[in-house]
Picture 1: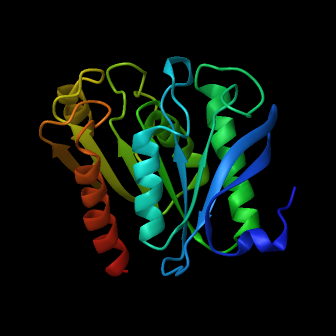
Picture 2: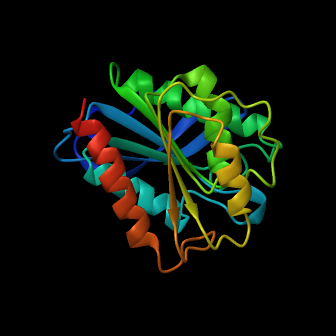
Picture 3: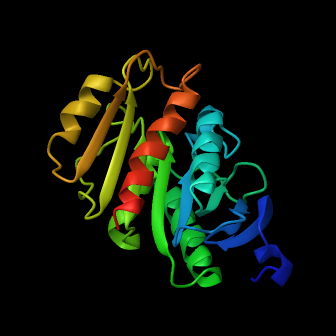
Length: 220
């Protein structure tokens, strides 16, 4: 599947249906006016069975932040959510959905570096896919270390930013920070007063990403 040539013009939230392993995957693509970063970003949303969609406010905040940093962004719905075909598959099929979106983005925008970003369940899926997709950058927000099995996940060999709300009522923040200590290439930022969904803290989340990712990019 290709998208019309005019879709490559700058613009926000252009909906596309991407062929996936069990049908279409619904996605929104945003291309900044000034593409100052040689990067595509694919953002994964929270758990589909608990209301997680690509419309989630944390996902929106990540998407907007990367867009303002001059990167091409794609946020998408996992199988069974919105207009994406299929049904929930315990994280396995969802990892395949992410791979399909990344492969499509790479085919449409060849030669660009890849950043994977995810919130909660989406962070887990991004980590699961990292070994196969080999991003140059990874951003994980509130990875659900206390909920899913992270023991088999390989540490990514790339720049990695982990943001964790210190008052998270869903994910055990202490377990996240303890788990993260085993990795040497990770930049861990704890956000005081932030719960799992970062209510009242979305601007702080945006600032962290702008400052940390912006400094990494400018240092290249």
